[in-house]
Image (cartoon, rainbow, N blue to C red; front, side, top):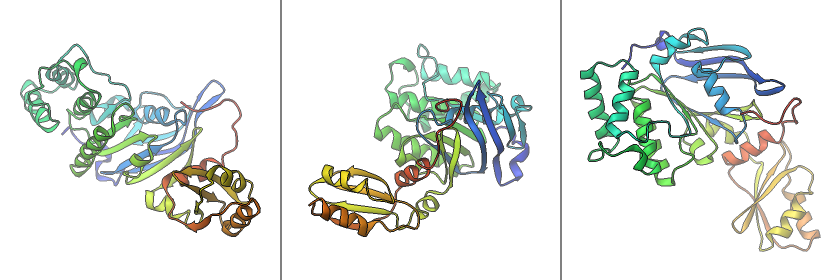
Length: 324
């Protein structure tokens, strides 16, 4: 592993306060505070355009913030971004290695970029080829591989120097569910080995795997906590309406005071209500008035419910549409 960063004795890998980035009149990131603990997977959850990628680029030192203070592994960013780079890995959404080079050649190139000695590079590359299941494929051109194989190669390249901190910007957006599951197993292996990971995603099932989450909406941090903490905050606010007239029931339910959303899930409706307001009886009355038979029951909230709850509160922002 590379020499540890200055903040390695602290429990905090990343601390950002008042992080902001404007592109002209557009505020892509707006006054975000973050604290990321060492040896954990911290997730950025949000739709495209919520500011996830812009935030990651600022934390990496690749983009200068308009305002705010950033400390990563004890380094002040962006002033000490160059010194930080040997301690971090970065994997983007798009496959960024050389498609006309083989698996081994790509890893050799990245080892050279990290100034690894020939002996250390050779040993590390053999280790990664075995660990990331490229045995028998080391001489295959990267451009001829499947999406999942390219993803594994990109991750192997990002950790070739054994970074303390790994940034992953929507790394699984172009691969199948099985490859995504295998990829996350690799991430947990990395955290078991001491690596801190910050990963952005718009997949709810991936967000549930993170130790802690930040939900971003239009550049703002609208929720922060573990998946259990976030869903626990919605206790009693999620309802299941079972009926064989889902579309008519939804039209009746969305007009009930206190109902935030109603979404059809299979043969039922999932309903989210406002805080400290029990909508169940009003929903039963609305269904009865519409001549719709159905049952209403309380169910466990999901991260999707959390996302809907926190993003629907945000007013439209002046000066632009969305973050990047």
